[in-house]
Length: 288
Ligand SMILES: [Zn+2]
Ligand SMILES: [Zn+2]
Image (cartoon, rainbow, N blue to C red; front, side, top):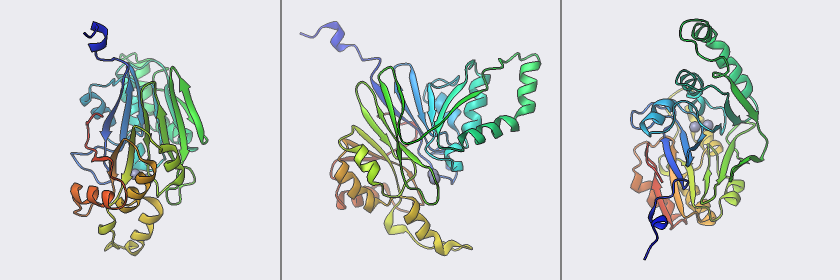
């Protein structure tokens, strides 16, 4: 009844791989923020948190360079893996510049990283390792809101979001031949992100548990709740936003200061505040 072709798995279907769902606090179970969207042999990375190359190898994705990296913002937890991605992929065989898209400042960050490893680059290229001279380079694209990539049926749109005092922070919408995906990056509740997420297949969004927000016992810690409200999205707010956007699947990641909140408590709060669709708390190396 079915042709052979119809039962073959599609090799070009889009898969989301959660490479890192973590936050600044080191957690062996959650690497720094990084999400891969894989379409056939093409791998698009969103953020490069700590541990990125180890997560790529564990996920059986290429360690010698991805199709392109898209950085949401330049906070260290989202970019600590950039030197790893640049140099490890080079040493593992990358021979062409790494394509990297992100806010203004990404070029200076990349230039400084390459300058910082100047002695390594000299030894590896001039010595017996004979690494290529093009492979450690990065093709930086400092972006503005709108479509930033459109090639081979994959369109990636940068959505400006509000993240505390950052002048530029982006979420990204990825449209592939078979799926639509939005990655929030770090943001307080964003109407632009809601508008870009209406009816998408997958919305991957940061979150913190509202019930656990409290001043912190450290110098300046009294401002913590104010910082969080200006910079991040609570489960209460996310339920309301997702109720409007109505994604087919909501994946929570980058859970800031969980402070004992359980997955079930956050999911219950999201339901209570307006999103009754499918929602999960993302874990490292899960595929959707
Ligand atoms: Zn972050
Ligand atoms: Zn941030």
